[in-house]
Length: 272
Ligand code: NDP
Image (cartoon, protein in one colour):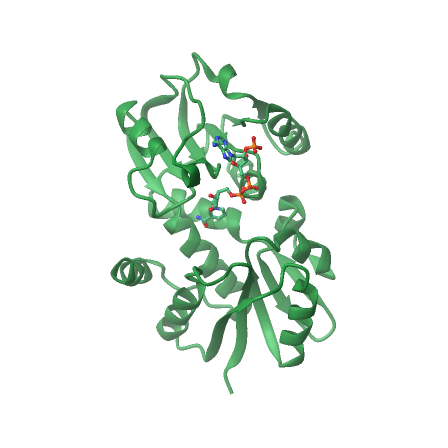
């Protein structure tokens, strides 16, 4: 009988995870069944219990349950601890392991797929929400020259920077303080594109040959993309690769086999 996995979220109808994980399973010959489960906003723990009771081996967790999954896990990996959130659960006999693969997903997309090294680079991370927090540890682990977190609500950027300061050269500020500075990698981890806007960035933040990376994907030519192009960013990319790489890392955590994301990008583009 196939091993059971799922993704919990609310809403969940939009999730691409079932298509991605099914493609990984076909590609690697793993016998798994993966489905999306809509958990009630106040019923995440019950939904997890019910899935374990039917023999579930593991799960992905998406909005709005990543913090709850962090609380629910009986053991956390170091990267989940650092991120303060869990997007991958493993159900063993006597424990629920909480992991976080978002950060490594972004890293693999930038350093392997886009072939853009992070070491000694000046990074600007826009946003100070869950997604920003999840990628800070892995980014700092690559030894950038500096990492600046800028956020609309300045105090959130500063407190996130203070939290991660023991790990590497990170500072926090508001968008106004970016004037006159340039960066090699600019990562947009805000949800501003959802409202058709972008952070209030000054001109000149993209150094020659820089990478502009927007975590949110699939919204076409957003204000951030247009701005990055007009300001001369060397490369512009979006978070579909990150989504696939975090899924591949979860698959690896569960099955011990690493799938290849490239063929699945084509599959998703065909289905879009
Ligand atoms: P949160 O709600 O935790 O944080 C949202 C962030 O966006 C905050 O920093 C907020 O600033 C900022 N923001 C929202 N609206 C605006 C605006 N109009 N102008 C400037 N800043 C704004 O969301 P997450 O961190 O969980 O997610 C952020 C984005 O990353 C989402 O769009 C999500 O889809 C994407 N994502 C993509 C992944 C992938 O695999 N590709 C994985 C995870 C996330 P403030 O603090 O001032 O409110």
